[in-house]
Length: 206
Image (cartoon, rainbow, N blue to C red; front, side):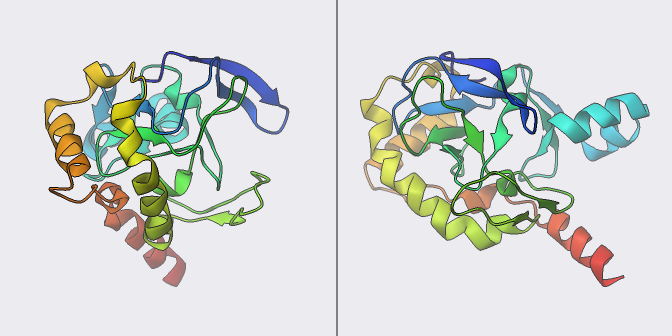
């Protein structure tokens, strides 16, 4: 479920549509939660679907750390990529704003964290653009992403959280324990599905 203070807008001819903030979303705000309305589809289920469904999954679904496809039911499926993403996912079933997102500003993810099947050329325009986004970027970028997440993690309990009610009880407990420093903040590495990167490496080697 996507943060309620967002809407779909046309960005430009190159990007098409994207999700923008309608109010200030402060850093530390949970911007998306994997919720009961999102659909989880196994690879076997996806492979048995007609091509018209598979094309939709290829465009809008992402792969979780277990290798299942997740198809968001709401506007979350329109969030675009940036190599300097406004939102990142720790090792929980949610994403958090790693900086303030101002009204009219686009919410972005780093698609390198979504277990891609193949690399793609990036034109996000960020000063830190990687030019090529790869299936194993999670391993390359994890330390950087984890650092950015840890910097804002203490703010989770201090800012308005419209999505807190849909965070799972297990994740709420882990967040509370991490904020009490009883356990580390869960690393984004927990979202990595290793066979994806291995499949591409084998294809390139072949």
